[in-house]
Amino acid sequence: MHSCNPGLYTDVILGLPFLKVNKIITDHSNNTCVAKDNGYDLLNPLEAPEEKEPFMSLQEKHHEL
Image 1 (cartoon, helix red, strand yellow):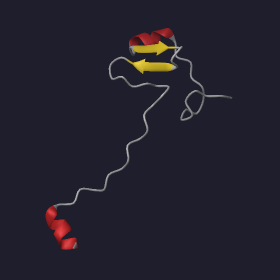
Image 2: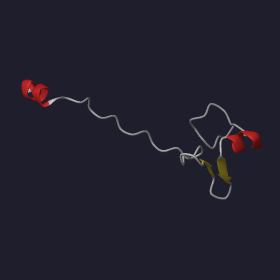
Image 3: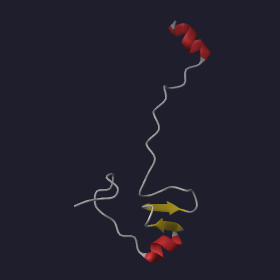
């Protein structure tokens, strides 16, 4: 089985009522499925951002040094 989105457990078919209620625009030629409200592309999600180091106050940094 081939999935367009490797993060999904299985292929999903979204019906027209679901697409309409959630304001999702599909573009078959560009292989996109974009939520109008926030611009999120269901078929091409962005990479997860790198985790940042926890915040450390200047006093904590000074104490660590």
